[in-house]
Image 1: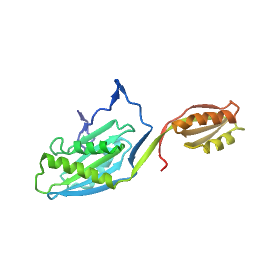
Image 2: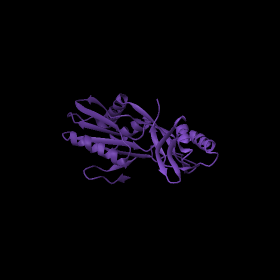
Image 3: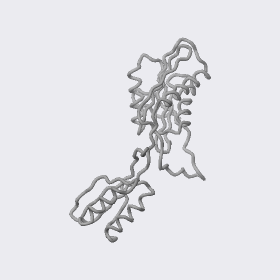
Image 4: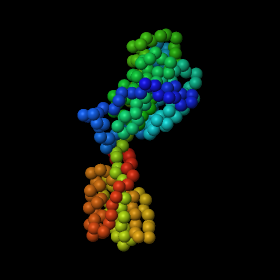
Length: 239
């Protein structure tokens, strides 16, 4: 299946479908691995240069923007082959051969990204042709090896899901509740709003810590405090 290209960019091929269990999608993960920052590696095969740039990307728009950034800085190259894996569950997967024989560039790049266990990551391999044809096997190895080398140079970052919790308490209990919540492990207090009827705390907590948030609020307010769902978010995991 071909996906529509942004202006100036080629169409992308869709990666394999996300696995399912008994016909239902798998539950989203609570933790995933990505890159902390961009990285680059280079190899030469029979005078052809292959330079791979990898980077974190939080969306398809960000991945395509990185592709265009690399492309615009190396317009003298013949090929800019790409692959990316996106989403906490890696459900979005795209690859593109950019003029290389079908299946010899983007697909092996995508295989390496998937095998690394990373997501929210994009790879661009820029090739300067050296005058010697490498053949199907040679291209597959070269593009895959280029991505592997770049990932080896990169720093991996873990991200963890935090559930959103909205806490409403009266003004008298508010400071005490806020202080207690800030002291809980895997819990962060974000915005604190002072409303006419009391204080509202926007809290994020690891899934296993949500029950402790509820117990703390109930104990310190004698059951008068209220909690409700907030906005989930992903945070960098503590080393």
